[in-house]
Length: 72
Image (cartoon, rainbow, N blue to C red; front, side, top):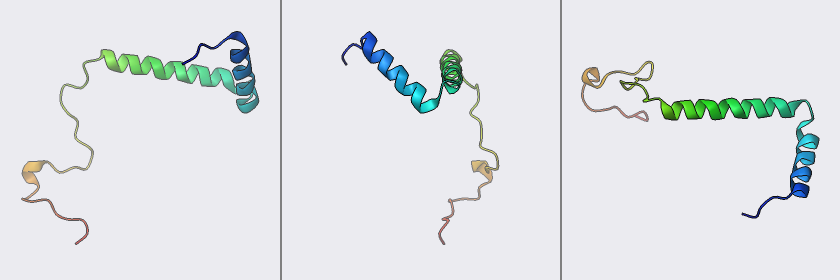
């Protein structure tokens, strides 16, 4: 990927201002920053100790045999 020079960066920023507006750019930047922080925090954590079951699911022991088809 080629390096971006000063002129290319200015042109991209001008397009962003025209596209999103000057008031939305700080909001977009902060939301991207929060997303990156959350992603890094998720990578650092060991994760949940036990797998979580989706709500409303039936445990396999009480399912009653083979799974049923939905299109019967």
